[in-house]
Image (cartoon, rainbow, N blue to C red; front, side):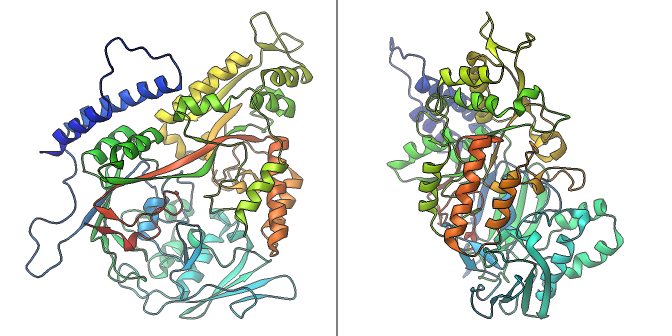
Length: 600
């Protein structure tokens, strides 16, 4: 039985015909069924299309050799650069890919815990490897594993880390505005095997840098750095098709818009991967990615390549016959940001906290959950998730409980929405819309990105606010806008986005021409109390004080509402039973142990 026939049979089983004469009231379940029927129709069409040859064992291995194994991985977004510390904003959802070709001093495992990687061991506070100096500065020391080599066979040394710091700290690239790069004063090679980082201030996460600091091959980039202007250096082919890293796979072939192929790297610090070849396929359409997974053309889907409804369908379908595994990780907060730039904000009354409270109070999260996730989503109203690897403290359960108890909550309440707007000077006209004393309607644009999930989300919110009395108009941005930081920061009223970091709301993260529009504080909110807590959180070593600072930031976010959370956006990974090894769907950690994965 061919993959296409098998796929169509499977789709029939997943979406059986309804009994004649049966009726279902319109509601969350009906919305879900209509959505999944659309998925099925796209998938049926995709089943007839030829795909990448099915991976696994090669048909004719040489006598005495281990059969070659190829893993095909589906992701949604194609990276502009393979570096995990890109020199300009490359959008979101690409870390699953960039991790394949890079290695760092340490790695974050599936539980967001640090493990040594290129380093033999991690610095430990109170020892010679992590010293706090009398003037408030610090010094951390890493001893590199022996015999590290770049993908081109050139030995890697501590000098490559010092060179990387030289690049990252250059003002022209505007990378050192946030932790940990902002706290670093100097990175030096004490000798070929020893990396010493000197910190301008105490930094509690100095022993867990992971993807925030990676080495760069001095033997390749030193000369271009001296010769080229900034834009030309950023556009150098090294960052894409000629990439040379230290990760488990080395670049073999890159077909823009289609796929990226890597070969297992024999010199990988933690040993040669058990998978011989990896093919990363880019699927802008999640339904097509889903179809290819069903047909066996793809063994691992991640990087936002499939949606929540796909994962739910696969989980039910695969449960009995054990044909695969689906992992859900609510790793980022899905939120609505308000514009604060005086030259952009419209209507200007969005700057009034009471108006933002009215907008939040009009959101029925229970109905949103039913319509989008059939009631199985993880709704929230604060910027903290247990899966986040950012802004973590030693006791995350305690932090979550304390924050939930402390922050202001805005439950769905139409009466409170009307009261908040009345306090801000608005009353409802005969058409039911809010109007100010001069008769102007409260009219606003709501921006979101193209995607079936996000467009459904946008439609629900716009309808919600229109029914509540706001004149809301949707604006769907194309996929290319994810790479246009200036455009993403120019919304006049509300912008729906995802983030796993409180750093997204500090002043240093405001996108500007100076930082090449790379910041994530796209609403340009500033608050001096928040800045003080953020600064203290990133310099305090005492765990209890840090927990209090974290809760304080979360409280300020809900008091001032520069943005408000609706739910945790789940990162979903699904893999066939032929693949063993994945243990976490988080965008930050899902491929952390890919060198250990095995194909049956």
